[in-house]
Image 1 (cartoon, rainbow, N blue to C red):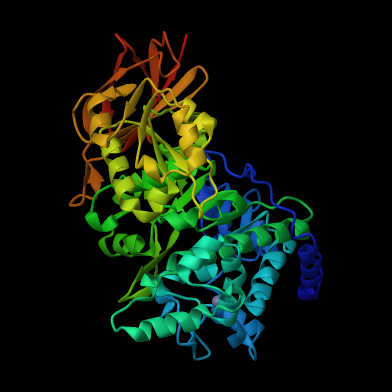
Image 2 (tube, rainbow, N blue to C red; image 1 turned 180 degrees about the vertical axis):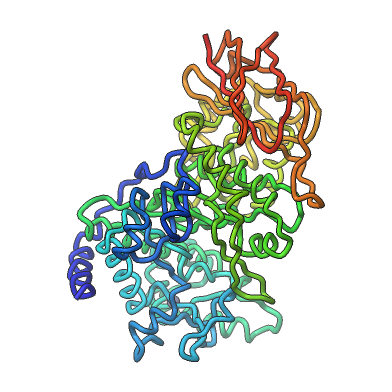
Length: 577
Ligand SMILES: [Zn+2]
């Protein structure tokens, strides 16, 4: 019954499929929100102060009652739901499978330990009508069952497996012709394609591989076009699902996705997303706090979407094995200090190739107080924006080619407590024209690989009139004086945030000691403040907030404030005269 109704709506939605979703995201998260990943019982939500459920199942009357008062996102998985897909189409499911260059189906690499009725978890193709029907029905039934929003796991679908070469199914190969047709004549000539409509990429790759042993699919001359074609197809499908969800519900339906932002192609469909609720590597295995997640939070800022993060399956496996709850506490503090948040680690998916899928039950007594601290002090979080000492501009082309380079230079800025914002220029993969406002507000600007920017973005960059312009991160490190300077008393991160007439300065103790699974408190943290830059000229007092203590007032003398003791995380609130 439900399926029939969904199908009717589905048919209707295709008719209006040309309606584009609004590119402005729906306002789905507040910075003080506490986001849960998976469903749990009412008491646990309450213990953490949960306000949002990001990866819920298809709502049931019971799960909606348990989550009453929470914004409920129901999750639809593009690679994790094989058993459900098989149940839906037990006779014909093979039509929807991805195919490698030899025509064989391939497994989802991180679900190789999964089977359904003796059938392995095959990767299914988001270009195949049967699998698209399955996913469309799932989106429709999720909103019809009462979800406020939809979360898409493995949102890149077929393109998510591009590193394996595929998919070379009949649909993927067949629809590549129309893509090739859109290429300029000169480019087609260069690639030796005279009949794009009948071009068979699968056959072309197969014979090209056979010509010379040792060749890899990714080295084929058409590979960059094939890759782009696959990601563009994935982005269009997300757009269609978003339109379908809105049509089905008769209202705009916010959409989230597990967009692993530190891997460049994951931004390819950001325009159809309202939030990222995503796995971000936290490098637990280094037994230290990592600055990498901050890059993900700043990328989310750059495209104007909130990021409710979680760590990777490998991170959680390591945390479980070593029992490093203290490391997770730092991740929580960093997330909120960055203006986003780590989803409450109540029950986390762990993965290693040896152990496969297993689960980590987080110790509530260590995590919930941090989330409750946020809920009690929501006004210290909502409405504040990152204060940037420096704007770092780079093109998606640079990030796509060498994300590690961008991440490591951002990490050096973070380690020097230079607060940065990212200005992202687009490319063929990520439709994000550099905004004039991005570069005009930059008083200090570092441009990475300027040649990579699209011509329109280069023009925007040319209009920038920063007081200081840097060619390299070394130059920026040597010359930028941050608005909040910290005297070297220990390892910490300083993240200032501002709104008109007020600033909050987050201090996160970075001195994690794995032998104690904790940080060593730092005494007498002296901060030299540029009050006018922070928009709080004339401030004479700061109020110190930290989990587990009562707020205290601290004097500001000669633009300097001293925090007597920093445990894991503290926030200074300052107001201008
Ligand atoms: Zn395919």
